[in-house]
Image (tube, rainbow, N blue to C red; front, side, top):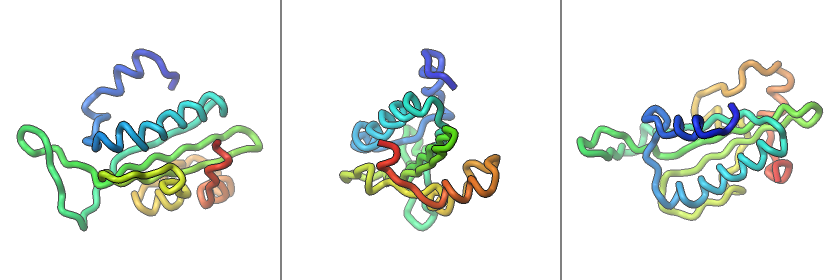
Length: 143
């Protein structure tokens, strides 16, 4: 999807909103979002999937007027570039806590993010390519 005013407007739909600590949203997560925009321009096209992670083993926190909106414990983002001959993928895991998190510490393989979330992010890739690029990552390849 190309970025435009419609896409920006649609990003504020309730189906696309999760409670995120301000320190994460205006800090590490914002840096990651800016990096993804740079990567999309440089790579010509990237596929990005992101979302919340709810941990059943931790006490749930709820917000909102009626305390019915659950706060995620963490957030993930996976990025895929299929530039011919330079295919690559990377994942990120950020806790939704007040702490300083940097991109290098948050970076993980897509396989690791799939293990955490239980989601197969790019099942349409042929198996050999999927196995090769989802098993490893190099943040330096993206910078």
